[in-house]
Image (cartoon, rainbow, N blue to C red; front, side):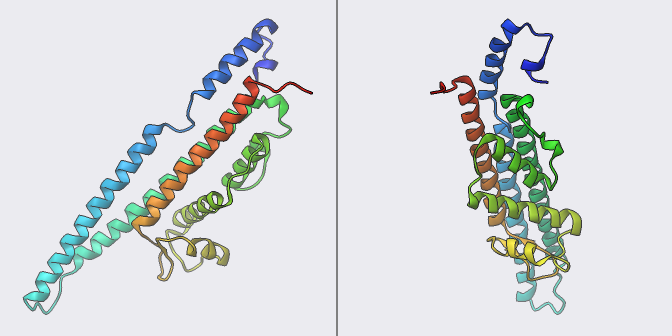
Length: 234
């Protein structure tokens, strides 16, 4: 319930309460900045570990080749590649979760700023996938549009996440439109039976999340500013 519709608050206090709430929102981030910083650190640490593991296994295989071993033992490399795949798959799934958290909190914040009594439809009443519904809600009531390049990067992340969650990375039943979306991304390989994800895609997707956070917070900040300092009707 919005402050305007809360009968427990005296009318004389509603505007001061609303102004106080708007100022509080203005200074609050939708995502904890430390969350992004720690995840960035986590990605760097896991990639360093993966590089070291791969280097160690390659050196072990090379040693066997140099001594003329007839049967090369590459079981360690197989295990490392499996570990690498699972780590990067988990990165993608978590980044998609961060995005969903951003969108969910942004929709709640925007509803609070505008007032639910001023919204013909709540976000929960709209149909479609979470990304599209929440993006359209924010664009419509925030009066802005997500830039095309950023929208396509986020759409690729969502498409990849859905494939990993529902098909475990399999490319066999991937739809043509999904394949086209992912084929445009550097660091994603669809040539095999499973999606292969490289380090550069993880870093690029994380930068897209950061860009989306900055953009959405900037746009909602502008809505808050207009609510605090409304322009006089001429």
